[in-house]
Image 1: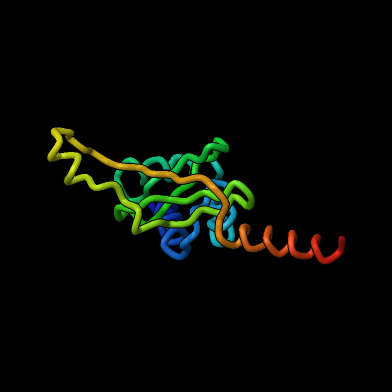
Image 2: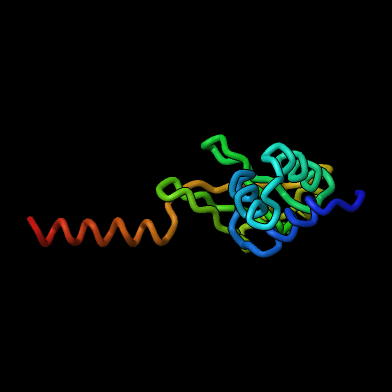
Length: 134
């Protein structure tokens, strides 16, 4: 990959976050230092960085594409209540076992959907409050 100041700015933004942003989030952050950058340029560079293995992608069931600077093997948890995305490092698929069974594993993307601990706790608190009121 050739050097590009725009690409470096995008990587810099991705390196500084541990969230899993979409292209518009990245665009808004990059624009703070590069006001003339276009959304199309950000999309194109995110796609190129993903293809080069510098970022991983995560498409949620909501149809939005998110990017992850952490390309190490891990799964993701998407909260259906708040939309947050969390990294799961202890839930990886055993690729060695798959290879032992004759599969040629190239990559793994695991996405778990449900309700995050924060939203579960909020739901419990709301139910407790409702019980106190009634």
